[in-house]
Amino acid sequence: MFGFEFADPEYFWLLALLAPMIAWYVWKEKHSHADLQFSSLRAFRGIPHAGNVWVRHLLFVLRVLAIVSLTVALARPQSDNSWQTYSSEGIDIMLAVDVSTSMLARDFTPDRLEAAKEVAVKFILERPQDKIGLVIFAGESFTQCPLTTDQAVLVNLMREVRSGMIEDGTAIGLGLANAVNRLKDSPSKSKVIILLTDGVNNRGAIAPVTAAELAKTFGIRVYTIGVGTYGEAPYPVQTPFGVQLRNVPVEIDEEVLKQIAAVTEGRYFRATDNLKLEQIYDEIDQLEKNRIEVKHFSKKEEKYFLFGLIGLLLLAAEAVLRYTVLRKIP
Image (cartoon, rainbow, N blue to C red; front, side):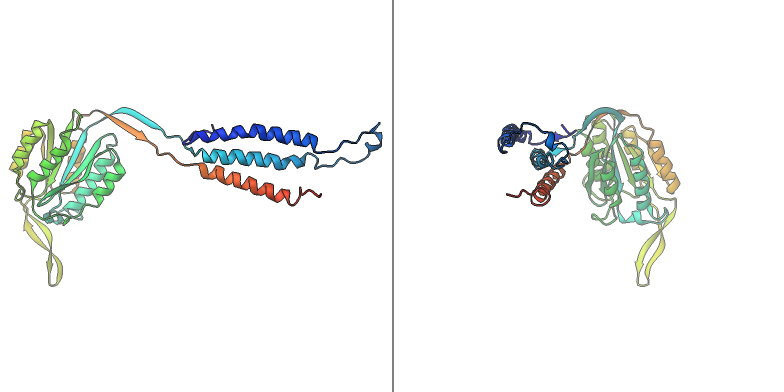
């Protein structure tokens, strides 16, 4: 009815009251006027017909329509709630991103962290059928976003990532273990972690290789990315004269990152600039896909206000007409 669903359809039983109401009105109309009999109607043929003879029924019609509209409003019409479940090609991916202060180095534009975020957002938007989550780490680690197919939420949370959100340091093993924990119970046949860092593991109670063995146990491939140029990189340093750039050595534990990738049957990549980092993500984008189930739904929208407003306007129109144009004179 009306192309809507109704939250409280039992209110439609009120419409049953219209039958006796209409019957009473018809009976009243037939018996409320005195009859005067004439032998012939020829004398009345030239008299103009009163135009409002039938208009007097308009008041009753407005009242009936008002009752119908208000009853529909009470039944709470709602837009159809559509659910679609389908299987699509995709994999489960956790992004593990280093947010330590060394990620502020300027060998990338504008810096390593912002470049990594920009490329990751592009990667996320190009994989709408995948479930993707985000783990960040420095001296400790936490989950910024669990696995989701909601790209908008994930992208917003990615853009909110800042260096200094957590204690400084580089706990690669802890960040990897956290990502593994988020993927281990996933039913997907293909589970991947993309771990991006620019340093050497110096914090955390879990060794990177131990975390890699844990990932292997749950069938998770790990693609590691070392971020940083070769040699030295400009790094912003606070001085009495403001922020100044100073060249600092680039130290990336490539051997550990390669070992993590090898243990989990993944690959290690070295990104030395923005373009190379983008090319790495493009290469990872060619990962094998498996089937996952995605459920889409649209939220119900209440429509009762419109019908309630129509009902009130009809009642107002009846009242205005009853005491103006269609006023009865005793």
